[in-house]
Length: 562
Image (cartoon, rainbow, N blue to C red):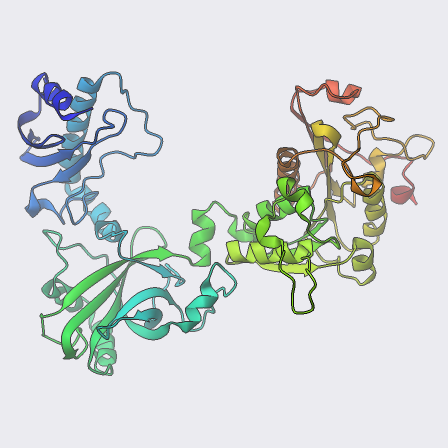
């Protein structure tokens, strides 16, 4: 909507609570809105995408900033949760009425005393500044005497904070580019811990006087502590202070302050020199507890141990999903190297392929497990990944596959799955999950086995004790499905990354069920409902898209009854 169209919209308005409005520019209007007890002054700033997007709202009553929740230091009013909101763009006149009426109702309601606690809980949000942020590995639920900050040294002999951390809690060095921060300077910040909630300044400006009023509001013990520590700091140009206060959730409010003086000065807690520049830094929390909850991971899985045997197209995708579920320990077992011919159906990509020869003039390939370990540890900060570059047969002989909460076998070959089943039956592992794609994009399966109940062979054995194709197959047997593009050495089974992702999702769900102590043996299958490339089984025709069935022990199974 352009300026002329918006002007016509205002001229035709019939909004009851709108006392008056003033056009400041084509897309910016000031308003006086009649509330229950007072007249509110607000500004709406539209963009040319209105009515498909809502305008920014600003409270112009400066004396009310710092008294109302959901209004930040600049007066920005949070009147709608933009994500997921459905806007009736076909009726902009009623939409404008809705916006102004909603803001009026919110301001009236937020001015009530019962919302004062919301204001204190939103202390961080009140000062939020996306241009001034610092990454923090400190626990948001803890109080500290001091924390440590890695800083970039500036030409004016001051410091720009990059990340902060606890002294006795090591940083996840393999995560992202944390290792490169080792070249930064390290300084400390004095922590000021309030035992009651704090309120923002009226008007929104964080002044030196406001800071000193916060220090004066501390209980005697904390005030004495911070004063004593502040006196130990040498005179310098800049200081960092972390404010920490309680809020309704377990997490504490945290704001990092930087005080910059024109000349060397004593610490601001013990100084009366107001001639300093105060910068506020919003906290980007990277602590384990916060990230697990914020990202939907399960914190209780941090003590869980999962092994994945086979890190091909399906196994690598499972590894990615499991790592983001909150599992604390992941072991990857596979003897294959990663090649570019699988790049369109594997979780790994070009970063795991090398074209440049080393000093011995050899182009060395990466084992899949090593490349996955590196990728996962770079993406996920709080996970232990163990890479075992050998066959599962050798891993079992060396007693490397034991004492896991869940083992996922993603080898793909039915015969090798049955061999793994036989070998794992004699280990101390209780829950085994087998998963595989069927060829040509027909579908895939995940089989969750409680080894105390049955085993994988139970679905492959007939009444005569013979190994036969399982009833749960999707494709009829005795069909030539494998392809080759370069001769026998290039033989492969056709399926796509999407196929592997769907199978991996079934296996991951089975794994999470098992970690939640849902251990009943079952098989989950998915199929391509539009598949017509090859002959299919009765099982394929018996369901639409996905299905799940319980598995019971076969009386003919030699492993379970041997």
